[in-house]
Image (cartoon, rainbow, N blue to C red; front, side, top):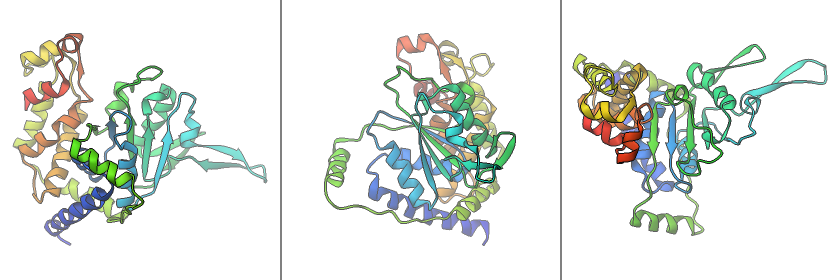
Length: 317
């Protein structure tokens, strides 16, 4: 199949995928779109929202609709790295045998990732970056496609270990889930308090998703779009010459080069699912906030004056 045909086919599959997910998830359109984009790009996502906004249900529904294996890991203060990766045991023949942990799956839901100590958070790092794990000196490859979709609550900050910058940078998207509107909440209550159970059909298989990821990598990008993305990331750095006053006054740190790479890959995916064969600057703008917001650190002055990171990014677009 030619690449043009493949992109046209992807648009149809993407729309059917959204309607399947829409059977269960009411509203939260932006969160669904960005979660699917991260899957098509082969990136990981961090879902941030207060309890009860269907973060876990969203990930579960997406994995069913994509036809992938799904494992949930509930992060707690006493969770150890071996609880995620797996461990070696002595079998009846007195031989060491490796028992795989929940990380050996296609989609990992890391629930409340900021509740666990840094040692356990770091166990995810290698898996997220290298798509492999090392246990007792042995190297194990993970099955592709592999995604980590992590959730964290912005409230209940007592007893939490905030994710270190190095680990935040590994997440392609940071997706904020908002409260539903009045009409959406009425629909949610009607749907969840009746006896009717909605079932989600699988639209894709694992092999198809890997093929889509390769297709998105092949999409051509013009130099002016790449220069715009790199320039946008450069403007978030307070010490750079391109930084505007707002950035110099309110930000401590800007985004690194990984943000520029992710902007381009996400713009390619955004263009493809909307039937375009090459991304333009509008595609970069569409994915800028979820890609940059967790890579930028604001200072105390911004906190005191109520300047949000989204405001800072919007002023640069």
